[in-house]
Image 1 (cartoon, rainbow, N blue to C red):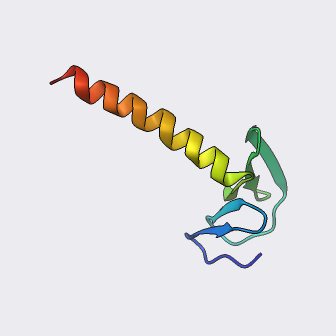
Image 2 (cartoon, one colour; image 1 turned 180 degrees about the vertical axis):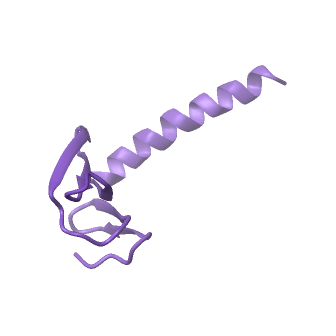
Length: 77
């Protein structure tokens, strides 16, 4: 998987979203949530983030967060 550093790339065939933060060999991967994995190097620095089933994840994430923001905006009107 070739992704430019600092870029988000979406792989439509596998519905995977990948964000490469820095080059380096992955030493460890930690699953933060179902389908969301953070990749670490040997210094325990984040080098990448992978989101599986990305279209569903993003739809849910955007809907939930935008609803919260909209609700907070409407309270101050």
